[in-house]
Amino acid sequence: MPISSRFAVGIHILTLIEVEKDKVISSESLAKSVNTNPAVIRKIMGMLKKAGLINIQPGIAGAQLAKDFSKITLLDVYKAVNVVKDKELFAVHENPNPDCIVGKNIQHSIEQYFFSAQTALEKVLEDVTIEDVVKDITEKREGQWLNE
Image 1 (cartoon, helix red, strand yellow):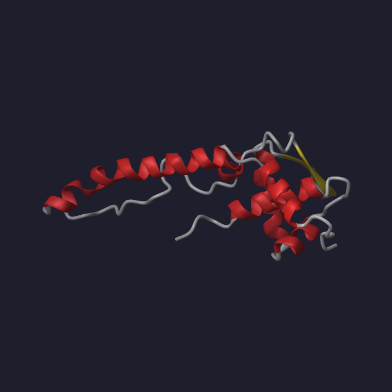
Image 2 (cartoon, helix red, strand yellow):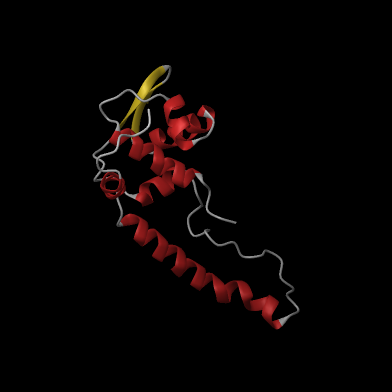
């Protein structure tokens, strides 16, 4: 099962808010860009607000980044949208047969590798900011206008 799409949508929201920072962007506009329902956008925006990544006011269109986009990491977004619980990216089956040599030891044996893999992923996410994403998009779209 892939990581929840809330992660990519959260990045999308923050990036669009920064790219269009001189405009008032409603949840409907964000939903058009993401190609989803505005209710989904509002839910994720609530998570981003709770994490201190955006400022929004109920009933008023528009959102702003709560801190400079160079200070918001993908790890911040990952944690904000509750992609996974700490140390639980990889699930270990719960009831292996305790009478089997493998069943009895598999969880303990593989958990260390799963934890290392999650730590490595989070390190990569910590080193990438919304600024990096914005720069990549603006370089690819240089000379083009974003769809309204």
